[in-house]
Length: 96
Image (cartoon, rainbow, N blue to C red; front, side):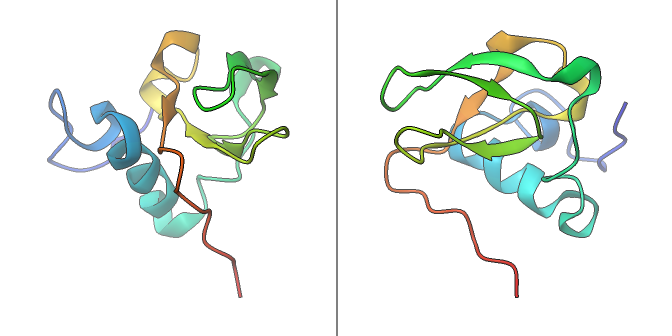
């Protein structure tokens, strides 16, 4: 489980929704968490942008069909219903 700071109440931090959750996970643990593999091999996801099915294998991942960015936080990493979508125009930042 992730102890991600004092703002971990409902609607904040690892319990945020939409773009806020995606941005939170991207920044968590100095950015190291985003690419970390999900426990148990990942979660079956449906893209909230285009409707394609895919396997979310890391905490932050783009849909292979449309590039829509999705994320899940460590406290909810076993719950496919907790997968959040950053929105149609969100682009994953590039790592230098």
